Length: 112
Image 1 (tube, rainbow, N blue to C red):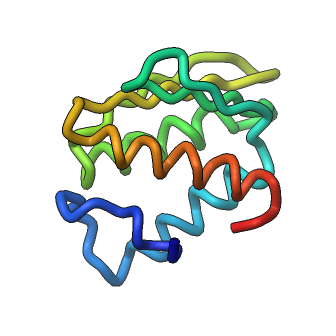
Image 2: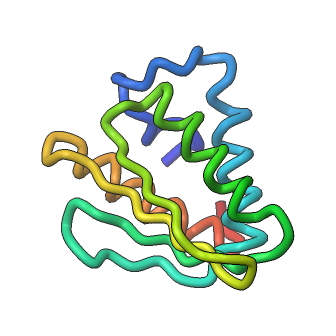
């Protein structure tokens, strides 16, 4: 799977900006991801290590992602020690969530 192959057609982010957004997610995952889980089929949970400004960084990135991919629902909780990012989708976008879960696990393992 190429870096952008998993991005759904319904994403409204201009194509030229997509590699930058993917790189931004990848950088966050490589440096902060501690666990990936699927508490429900339509929900992905990313556990991220905290630090100064991490919660705000995750909230900002999730907010910008919601702006171009409105089918995602992001919920960010946590504190300075850990951040939990729950990502939910409707049934039609479950394949996108599956691809995102795979990407998160792969990137965090150092194999993008």
